[in-house]
Image (cartoon, rainbow, N blue to C red):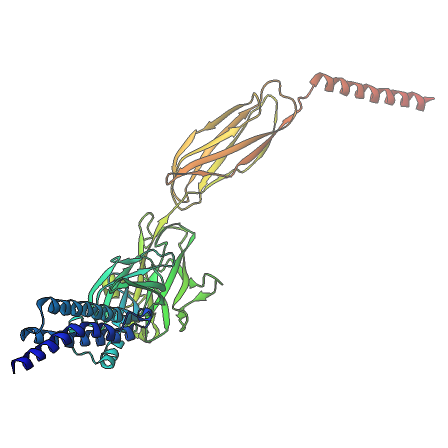
Length: 500
């Protein structure tokens, strides 16, 4: 009996010593295609792990019965550990390969503070986790602990065509993105665009960039209005143009009316198409066009009034009203609207400002610009300075450019000020030199002044002065005597001739 037990023990030891080598032959060697076909590599690693786990359990049973040594058990445990690591690596490789994030929606909307924002909704599209779990029949704790339906550390940014970040914050982080639970991140647009690139970094460093066209917020029904020249200085009697950019944020209507609020009636106004200059009262958006351009042209009156005060800004609003809500604005032109009221009506508007400025216009008038005098005489005449502009004129001066050696006098030398439409008179006196030759001479009158800190120059006037030749009394008397003598001789000769 003892010999039989010893024989059994010897056979068990021999089987234990042969088992590892036989397992080494049964274990599949590394296949280079496992990196290419990771799902099949995972299946191979799982089978190897399960086989080594069974072998380790058998070796441990033999060790407990003292049929193998501690060294042999340690070798089996080491091989099981290597197989487990290989299995975990293959499992992680498949999980990371299957990770995929898609952009579910990207909505551009108009915030109450006037900023343009983008809401990007991301979803975990890693739908293969359940499939390969069933395929490989993986139900162990390792698979559940790796959370194959969760993508950790998702970083999101939005870029323009040049690759610059145009969203605030520059980068948003989603700690976990679970399958079937989309999450949204909000950005403030630092550059107003209709198409942006969404840049994603997630998982083990996977990167993805998608260029997408932003959707419009279908829950609102308004048009955002912007103007680069929101404040302009305009001279009275002149016109100014405000360029407008209209951007649709609506899923309800596409026809809107253009209106102006709080602009005085004395100020002319109309909307026009900046391309064709056609007048507009309404705009209509199409499915492919969500942004339009328009222009508001205003004309100030020639003179200031109680409504249009010089150097006092006039604030007004351009309002874009949905066509189906015009009934809410029946008294639009007959009352003053506040910004809070327009915000309460939830319509698109922009505040504009015009600063009425005036500038004096100097007109010089004279009743006569031609004078004829003798060389020993002077010419004196008056010049009227009239302010035909839209602002006061100050320090009006009339200067004369006279020929060489002439004497000039302008009184007064300057007029202190001229109100709008007021006249002032200046007397000009010009005296030729003693040795002046007969002929025509020209004197140029130049006028200038200041208005609202700007120089104003009047139209030059040219005065023509003719110097008449001086008369010789002695010569004239001699000629008269000769003529009288000749006449007397003719008479005497005629009388003598008749007596004969």
